[in-house]
Structures are given as C-alpha cells and as structure tokens.
Image 1 (cartoon, rainbow, N blue to C red):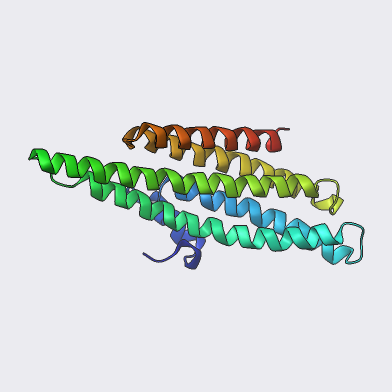
Image 2: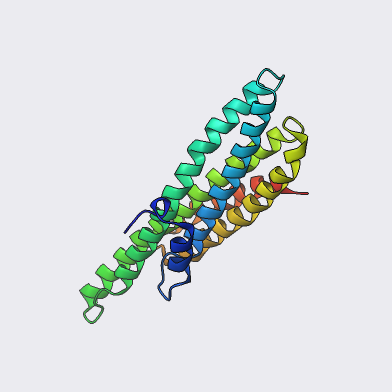
Length: 200
C-alpha cells in the first residue's frame, strides 16, 4: 500500500470513497488531525516570521517544530489504521468450520482488534497534543491568524472524538476484559482532556 502521505489529496479521498473497508473513519480522523496540526504550525510560523524577536518567539518556534513532528506521526497513524483494519478483516475471514478453527479465529480476531483499538488511541493522544498547542498559542500569536487556531481546535475536536469512536468499535472483539477496560478508561480520559481543551 502506498503511504497516504505520498498520495495526492484527490487520491486519498478517492481511496476513502471507494467501496472497500479501509481506509475508513480511523484514517480520516488521523488525516483530519494532521490538518489541525498543520494549521497550528502555520500560525506559529507566521507569528515567528512577523516578530522573530518577540516575547513569544521561543514558544512559537517550539510549537512549529512540535506540530511538524505530530503532523508526520498522524499521517503514519492513518496508514497504520488502514493496515490494522485490514488485518482484522483477514482474521474474520479465517476458517471456522471445526472447533479448533473457531478457536484460532477467535484468538486472531481478538489480537487484531486490540491492535485496531490501540492505533486510534494513539491518534487521539496525538490530536490532544495538537489541541493543547493551539490553546497555548491563543493570545500569543498573530492576531490576524486567530481564526486559524479556532479552525484547528474544531478539526482537533472532531478528529479526536472520531478516533475515540474507532477505539470503542473494536473493544467488543477483544477477549480479555482487563485489556478492554484499560483501553476504554484511557480513551475516556483522553476524550475528557480533549473536550476541555476544545470547548468554546
């Protein structure tokens, strides 16, 4: 599979629109999060360009570098999400006629679902870092770009909540109740933090 980062926007949207299971909502959430990161990076860069020796220049420089890194991470997570879902589909297609086949299929589905839940949880955490950076820049960056930070926060909220949906969709297929509970609790905590950061 060609990395989504190497595709044109039109190619990615065509892949998303295709009647195939992946890429799907998880990849879309990660790419939306990367868009939010890019906006925050832009605002930091514009602010730094306008006032390279300003009082908040160090914050703006750190933020621009952090967002560039997270933007790349989120694009990689978009790839990982599509691969994780493909692996789950492959596990579902394993034979299930004999008892030992059903057991093997169940174990494979559980392992695949655990990975397919872990990836969007990583996505959610990365997006929360984007929202936090946008909040830190608010009032400490170029006033004319304030609306871009607002847009970044809206993208981050939608993308993060969407990633959380993808975690939750995989939980019922995970056999181990402790693993399910841990993933659910971590997701809930990350969602709460994201909602605090992105509230109007």
